[in-house]
Amino acid sequence: MATSTWIIILSGVLLSSQVNCQEAVLHISNGAVDEEYCLVYNSSWTPLPLTLSGAMEYPLVNLSSSLLCTSAGITPSTVQGKAVVVMRGECDFSQKALVAQDMGVTTLIIVSTTPMSPPSANESEFKKVQIPIVLMRYLDFLDAQKVFGEEMLVKMYSPVMPLLDPSIVVMLLIAVVTVSLGGYWSGACERERLSGGQPGGGGGGGGEKCDSGDVILYSPLKVVIFVGLMCLMLVLMYFFSRYLVYVIIVIFCLASATALFSCLDALLDLAMCSVMRVTVLGKSVSVRSVLLFFVCVTVAVVWGVFRNEDRWIWILQDLLGVAFCLNFLKTISLSNFKICVILLSLLLLYDVFFVFITPLFMHGESIMVQVALGPDASGEKLPVVMRVPRFFPWSQNLCGMQFSILGYGDIIVPGLLVAYCSRFDVRVNSPNKIYLLVCCIAYLCGMVVTFAVMLLTNMAQPALLYLVPFTLLGSAVLAWRRAEMRQFWNGTTYEVLDSTREPLLTGGRPDYASRGSC
Image (cartoon, rainbow, N blue to C red):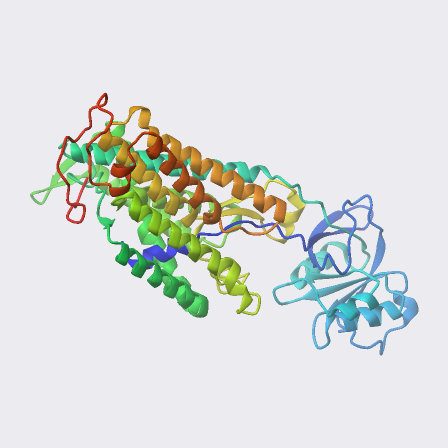
């Protein structure tokens, strides 16, 4: 797997529920028609009521031709006791607010032609301003003018955000199912390899359904060097994301289309669908493979073209993301538990450092968060996360759909350990796939704790901080309790201490470095 593909994974090891408590709703009415628009405000500066019924209604005065840096040219009696719309620019928010406040304005709405961010000022300015200050998109105001003309009555409110949104449950289900299926698939490929079976592959003929072992991490030094390169790549993405983001998008399209082909091909094999071979120019061609190829490429191209259409494209991104993660877990192998411990521990430190430590010397910015968000908050974003739209409240989506997100790395990194446990189940012929089961349960517990901490702190969390300890400790305790820690740690010794169970292998020391297929 190319280093560039790994950056897709490792720039997505951040779990965050995208809840923006700085957004509000502008309700406009003329007695016959009602419309609502997005507002952005500073909740610590000017609190707003939580419901429409609790909001005060004011007539709106259109001063969008004015910047309101001074009161020149404005008669106070025309704006007193009313809400006022002015244009953003030239002077800061607090100056506009103080001018409006001195003229008796009840609410200041600043329309903006640039991406909106909550209005801010120093603490001394906060104390002087007593009226609500909000930002509105200029295009939204033009739309309101077309609907209502100049006769508008406005109310502003900020709906309360529920602590637990159902989207979190959906995200949890996606993560656990993907990790479990990826681990099971890796174990199935290991069983096929050890039993000497020929990988089927209706799609391409021999060896494409189970190609576990394409890349095997078996040297601690190489793992350390590898993680160091990932740190360098992430830093480069932070400083040059405006250019590299398109490279990552292209890589994701290619990698996810390939992964989707692999997953669908395996499903068709499982369903015993015919490969439908025909002879073309003296060569045997699988019709099924050709059809699958066009379907997978089409899905990836559609995502690439419409990737910024939040309303529906998240479905394709999640589909491609699940396929990407499944194929990765099936293809990549860790040679033993020692390598699992080294890799997961280093990536845990990587995660915590780039989320929590970098803001201390990067002017408050987290490198991990900024890379995940993309070059700017309204532009391109890296395809490194699963996304599920928040169910409540619908009015918050006026400002753009709100998503719960989970980085691919939070699935794949612990998933590599889950896959190793599944393969170890096969090697020692453990009953009921006990290692796979326990590791999946540990992953579920880690995810639940991650979401709980995120909800309690209302902050993005580095999920590996919780997932790595749960999965490593869970699998280690199981191996210790079953007296198989030596085999589990080394990964290459198949002598089973419990003589009541027969191992699948009775000896030998497979060469993990040279293993090429499942």
